[in-house]
Image (cartoon, rainbow, N blue to C red; front, side, top):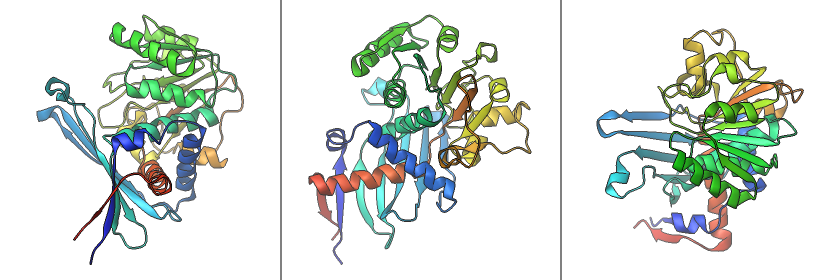
Length: 332
């Protein structure tokens, strides 16, 4: 029997899908669905490939009420730049929630993941950052450093951004791009400590395997979105920071226990093993306590969920049909 599958390229997706409050709203719905307890989301299949300086993650989620569910493959091969290739790539497959038949393949090279990851940071800023953010800080200088700041700015329109990275030239380039994209004052600074101490909203976006943020730098009216630790061995925050926080939240507790900042906090005794953190979906739903004053210190630990992938892939599929882009192929 003949069957049609929609093939969509990165170029087509980049011409139609962009960050904005609408994208934040879309990802917010995915987290709210997770809080309902009805989403089927298996553990991340993660492969660390040290022999080739690489890692591969596979994520999926079935959300009741969505016409399709996504399966995403995300390879990171970090020696690729030596070959003139990007480090990160990947694709998403969209399958019918009724028949399981493949409906679409998005050859996005990680673009949809970039958007949904940044939008998750925007959702966190919407619900957990202080109401008044004058200065936002970002640790890291890559794609997510830029996109996270942009997504957060839609929710908390700060006036100033501080950037720190191990490479000062990269940090200055990142600051320049941010200033251009959202028309704010943005500067590269000489220390991570300065970024933390002067910011009310801090985003960490690195693949670091040792803490970059010291507990002694914490101060009232600070929110941290830590999204770099998404695989075993990664760690951006001094684990004592988790213990100091007034509110500590995970995107998915079962993932953060293995991959996020919670893993290190548990291993060092900075989070009690008999206490379960709130999840972002519960904060959105209002079923768990959130920031009650701007003077609080709050943290959200983001490891990335298959629910986000299913949400954005469904959205991309609808857009492709409504705007008539992509290529249909027959399977026979």
